[in-house]
Length: 390
Image (cartoon, rainbow, N blue to C red; front, side, top):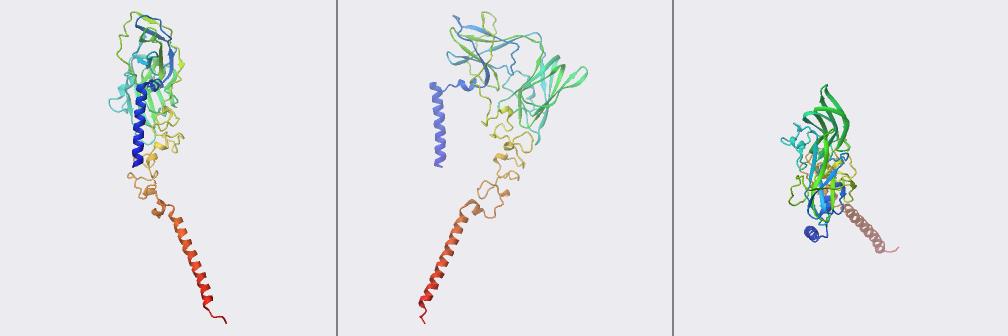
């Protein structure tokens, strides 16, 4: 009990020290935020005399899986509000539906908000299947599908894409294993797309986007810059991150804009791949996202790591189950040896719990035998001494 209290006290002390460190500036809270972004761009010191809405052009050839940006004022070390402006020639509007998703969530895959998601639960022991239908209001030419997942979610195991074209249903991507959140395929025109997903862990999709050909005339990022300040623009994150910013000015106003050099991607040295269980395996490729299993063992090859599987179907995950192959929901363990009673074959639970007892028994038995031998020998000697000599 004293040990537990000491650990709790130590944890509270570390937390208080961390808070104090952040408050004093010893620990930079922005590192964790910036660490979600793969790339960044430095603006250099801006030569302006008054606060000015600054425009950073985004090269059309720069492929971004997510449209999230974070603008850090490196002079004040504070994040600033920003706005992405896209000039479209013409864009098809998509809606998303899926009867397999949690009711009411399927529409979130096309709402443009990375904080919302459609949720798909497992339906059986092996990989579950879900079909998502994307419908456009006009014929759409596309050759790329991008999937944005919620935080701490693994990629689906496999994907298949079909398009309903004028000639009928067409397979544009035969069932294939997923290696990333982007899937490329031959350019196809259709207004209805069927995306079948095969997954072995609970799945949450924030956005599902088909890249539309030749629709973006120009993209740019806007933020309010201060005189003589410098800024770091972070982009291309691997997860959703809430950016703490203050009140925003009217960034949509097109007057008095300062256009600077286009976004130039540099590798972000602060980037840390999303790995919630710290097992060295990125979340999107981890077959057991929330439980550390660097070996990624999957004996039954169901796409779900053995550590977070439930072989005996007793609602207790293997890593916590004291009898992995025998159902024992109550986890009874009479001798507290970590092995559940239903699979504990030891006859003597006392000797199993106290492994030294057999040795004590052997030592006592040896002692008794030695004592008996000494007594017998001594008795024989005494008998000889008591007999009268002839």
